[in-house]
Length: 458
Image 1 (cartoon, rainbow, N blue to C red):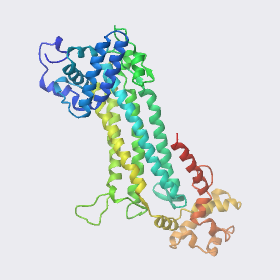
Image 2 (image 1 turned 45 degrees about the vertical axis):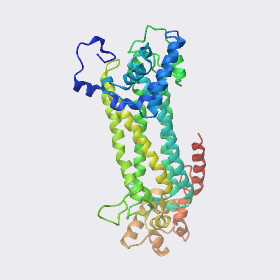
Image 3 (image 1 turned 30 degrees about the vertical axis):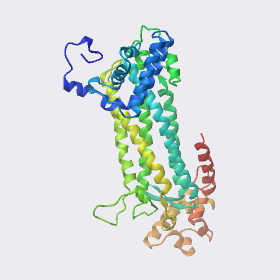
Image 4 (image 1 turned 90 degrees about the vertical axis):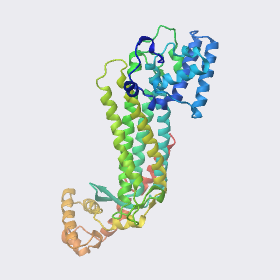
């Protein structure tokens, strides 16, 4: 039998079973983590005098040779060796002979694969946090340039109140800041070592799990060996944070698509982030934000898929858990690619300030300010609301906007109106007057930018 575990078996594995149960087609992405974990493991074995120093040196030398071949893309994986762990072990034995078989002393593939995934997710979570930060920087840069740019703010996709474009953009900055915090927090659960838990019950060898964990940069060690090999909460938590992050990316992408449409014309995306039509030469399609919007579904699907795999599993390890990797890899790859495109797309987009100004001058988004105006003159808000509703209806029926109405027309609706109403209704005044903390007033947006700048330094 060529299988490393073949001693118990009298028949070769059915070829179809071999193909369907082998994971080397995708878990080869864990090769560098597997080698890293193996070096830490054999170093601990030597420190505990479970293998000799000479054996340790041979094994580490062999693993480094395998690593060199990995980095040179010279490894030829075999489906007969099933997974990345057994392939790496086979490469090692090919390099240094039977002593390579001592590497697996005191561990199982169950704790080995869990260790690899903890290491992989730890590395890529840190990469994603930095990519989120780069996207925040791009948003910050655009916001800093557009504190005084005013556009309609929307609720129900209906024009609601004028807002600073910087204020609108910074809403996404803070969404992403929470995403970055969630990823940071998830590292607390990712940064735990399962190495040395064995198949499920630990080992008879006098290993030092804490030493191995420390050498791999883990903060903690799982206190329960069964939990160590069966826990995939850290992946679920990462996927949950990833799904929320992808939802925020999708929401922003949706606005980029809308804003760049002929109907809005608030922005124009750089040509390098758009494509054309094979039949309509005039088209400039916002394909990148559309694609980012669509990719949200696959990230959600990966989370639901793994939740479904895990929901009925008894302790400890089960082959079902082989289904934990492809979704995790895909989520990482999708997010890294999405954020890598989003940041430069935001940074290079052209903001059409004149179109935004025109839009905010040709709507009724300043209507609330008339109500506030009347309230400051003593009229109860509920009565003022009714008065403004009638004014808006009158304006619509007469094809006018609020700034078009004469004082005589205003007086028909209430005697409290004076000439200062025309100043109050100017879009720039409407924005400036919203000076409560977190509001869209330019003074508050300037303060918010300072807070955002501090957040980027955390």
